[in-house]
Figure 1: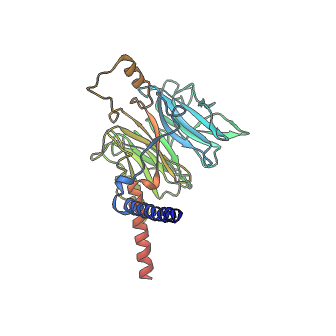
Figure 2: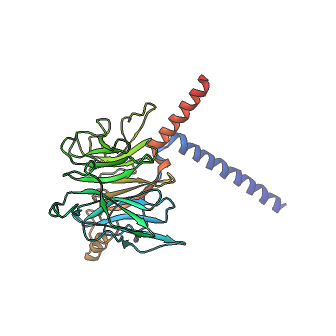
Figure 3: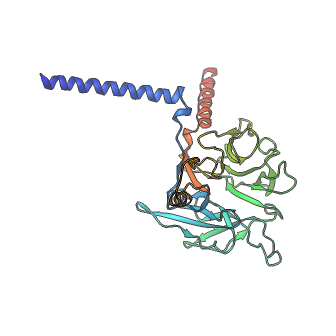
Length: 343
């Protein structure tokens, strides 16, 4: 008799828990989207994300190599490093063979993993050895070894700064540049690989403010970039723009919290499986320094030596958990349903 009561109790509790979980999931999916969004997490704490200034992310398709930059507190000098995964553990960071002498940053690794685009302030030739504007370079791997870096052509590189590079499956190269004919002080451009010609991305994406760090979806269906335009959360926010059915860029949407804060968010990168959005953040405005609370010297040193000390760090968040992408998915489903009805 006691055993029967116990079994009945267990069945009732199981059914109750299933009901509660179902209600929570439905609430998360339909009624409380903002409350159920994933929170950004640090990428490999104390391996990649440390008390130093880290930024940029480039990951190979299989996900076993991560390239990024380490720089000084003022971002005057940067070096590209990488970690690789062997079995279940990650290696310690190592400077890539082609970096470490000049200021190098913003790596982008191709899908094949044997070519890396990056930005550098190294001289493009002996004549211009005194110039230090940022240009876009590339380096190729042969026989498992990286060769010598080469600059892209003058149709991409100019006498002004070129920053952050990403590549689509059509081999169109997207980047930002400070060239004076832009709409703002920093604009986004792309190189049309078929025409071998550079175009400004236009007023739909660029503004009178600063727009930079474009990451292009490999199918070129959407683009994520940084901007300090009005209406944001702080110094610089991440925005996304989707292409409509006519192949035109739509109005950019702010990715919102919890990605954007009162700090600078920039350097977006999406993993090849579309699972995660990686991005960089610096500024320290969003850090709780416990102002008004008495602190010892040890407390101060520990705070300043901690990972989230205001210098740059690299984070990731689930792409599908972002409200903008959830709404986009719902709109696509709605459009698909409407098309089926019309047929």
